[in-house]
Length: 206
Image (cartoon, rainbow, N blue to C red; front, side, top):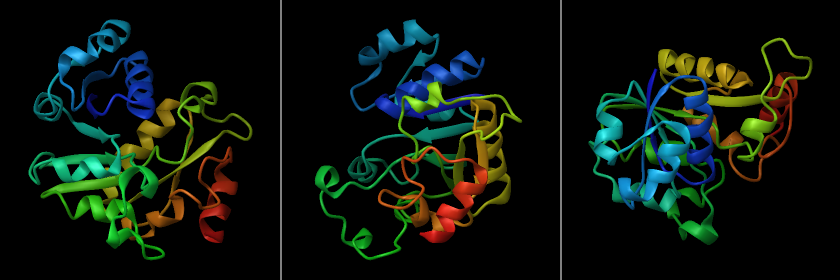
């Protein structure tokens, strides 16, 4: 699969490494430009490009940036793509976003409302980045670590769930994008090492 990754921090950089290891065709971009990504590109075999280049060539795009940076993108940046939102809202870092200060407001809905013609899927936001490598196991492993995946478009969500499985984790359908607040920071599933049954229980208890 051709995958664009926007953001090369802890999650974006780790996904670049894991997905290239799985022979996906990855283009990675960040706000500082391709020159800042040459070490990562040489390490992984991914291409370093602009945001536009990463999106244009992609079947699927992963957004892994501070949430405050979302407002800097043009509304048409990700048009026509599945956009995997791996971002989290941290007020101390992002500043207060009034729409997200109310209980049960989903940051991924806030992201979706800022872009035109996208299918946003929430994933990869609940796991500590080192665990993306350290806790990956084959399908069928007893007590395999699971990750929640939320979204409104069935086909887009299934595509992301298949990618989660390929990366070494059971994918749990976490419902609609509006329900994705159940996997945000501070909820029972966030940064916890849980199997699929435990993830479903944690989402329910939220």
